[in-house]
Image (cartoon, rainbow, N blue to C red):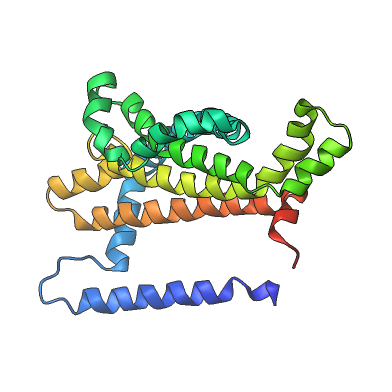
Length: 252
């Protein structure tokens, strides 16, 4: 059965494309382009050398902003989850900052870094940092007490307890947080590129809209964003098959 697990989603996508084609063909006023027009738009971008340029620009910004957030937020969140006094002191500030949309920081990002890659990377970092911090904190909280008690009974020091019990125990739940944060980062880069930079898939959408209402390129940018987002999520989900993480998701 696993051999044909790709079949239902493929059929569903095919149905959506057919429905899209029929809806576009029956428009009284041809505004929304059909699948073939969008495919031609993607081909046009490829011929002009813009397809690779814009995709690489967006992935570059997401990679740096996301990795910076991972490198700082996860240790910070694990520390807060492990040290309850630090959590009590800093958690109110985190809860105040958490509801603020990363897009609200766009004017400040442009003021600090100007229009360019640094502003977009900063926004992606902010968008990823707090979700990753909260995921790491909650992962530590959700460790069954019996794990820590067993480690203490075996005479593990606090340092050994963290390496041999804490980190392996939080990895499965932390991976969920990593997936969610990557999705948020990918959404934010698109919004940031509409305002703070002059390249990338977000810029493609807004520029195509302003430069002659090229809705075929607008939808092409949307399709590319969705396809790359799917690839990123698939790559993150593949980590669940690692032996060191598989225990946290049960067995087939």
